[in-house]
Image (cartoon, rainbow, N blue to C red; front, side, top):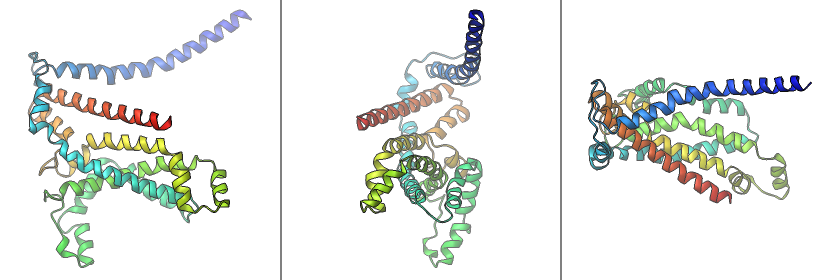
Length: 293
């Protein structure tokens, strides 16, 4: 019996080890090893193809942080940062409404979540047609008698980043909506019933039951939105190529690496972006912990 128990324990340990080692090896190979190599490249002037490179220390980091051409593109991220709060507000609104009894609730849930299922490239081409001259948006404005409001939606510097940010709102609202809806539906229904008996209306339920119950989820979505606004890439890259003042930090990093063959400098830019996201995440965790306390 003792031998059988020992063999069973060994089998369990072997299974656990087998199911753990494979994802661990993949994680080290495709995540941590490239990160270490990227940090090494950031200390050199490697151009991406030459077998030789020179050690430059922190010169690349100094260049990124002091040269406005590299760091000021973060101004573009402000449009997406502001759009994040509109996106979260809409997601929370729809999640709250659809958490109550609404006709065709599943249909509306599908409509809201569907844009998130689309590929970023497809969304870029959809909105290229939406914004182009004589396209969908111009046709709608003409039909409403608002021809004077028609603009070069992607060509006018005063509005092109707003147009791109709206595209981002359309794409990601469904993702945040799903997270909020799941959090709201996890609240005990008896709490709502007790509130209704006490005469609470829907606004009271939202303010005193829903918001306190999903506080941590709201913080989570905020940090995801902030991180996403700093690392926007596919939508502006596909729709404008980063031209006309729509360049984001990630587009600038990729152009630096592959267009100008400055892989060392681009690696330093990527490390700086990683550090910013880590700092923002740490602040969010501290804030969440304090709120929880």
